[in-house]
Length: 352
Image 1 (spheres, helix red, strand yellow):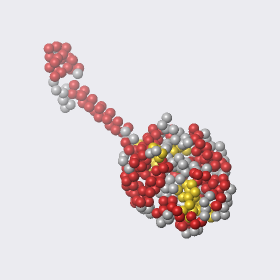
Image 2 (image 1 turned 180 degrees about the vertical axis):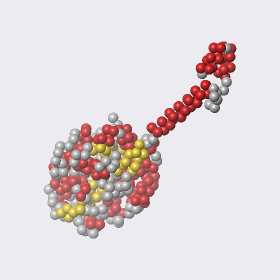
Image 3 (image 1 turned 135 degrees about the vertical axis):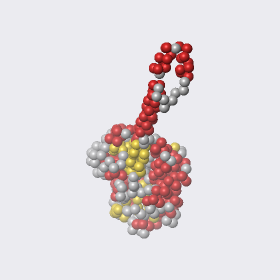
Image 4 (image 1 turned 30 degrees about the horizontal axis):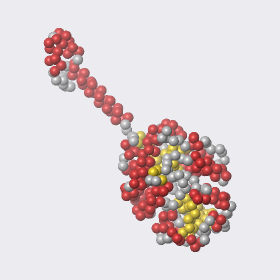
């Protein structure tokens, strides 16, 4: 540019001709060197931009084996939506040998699915977990018995043998305490075999899994009595998205993006159940889970009323009264010794 200015000053009538000459990056003239420098600078800027845009890895821990309970997350990953939001989502191996509370507490996961009671127990242990989205607002837990047993109300459980999962024993315990009944409780395991064989009079089940399993096993609805814990004042919020306070503080945009994309995945799953089943069965087959597409399709349909109201997602806010109910029940049963953190510290609304 300086050479051309000098030319123009020496010969004003040659100014237009000088600027009209073609520029070549290969030329040895000073103006060619300037353009070469600009080209190199532009390449460096583009390279720096591409590095900054690389997706950030986020490790996600579901809290049970691969199944339709996690369809929204599977779909969002398969469709590339997390990556579009700047996240490289790693869905960690999940099942009984990968307990979500421990994985999150040990910082082996960045985000995890937990029941509200599990999160409060972690808080009791000094692990600063935070609820960033509540997916299932009501309890799916029920006590189920064979109709021939005559168990219709909680009082009928007195002295009976009842199975429940050790990790989710709080709500049945709260039911027994509320109604003043003293059943004999035993650990349930992973199947409903004890109920079907008469080894127990009642068993714990979720509406979307074990109850579906009983129907698929040949039992008709009129052969089963279902006692929803939600109907007896001890139903607590279940699947919620949790992170450590430190993670939320250090990676707020990543966590917000994960929540937004996950909610979108769940909306899509209920609107496109066939696509959801494809994503679910891909994980089921790879994990070697003993289930089938029909079971998983029924599970997804049973999850629908837990997630949706008038075809709209009910979350992601954790209801303040649900939080207070969980705290009250857990303290009354001796599961919480310390005063928990205030609701505003436990639940963070990322939409605000």
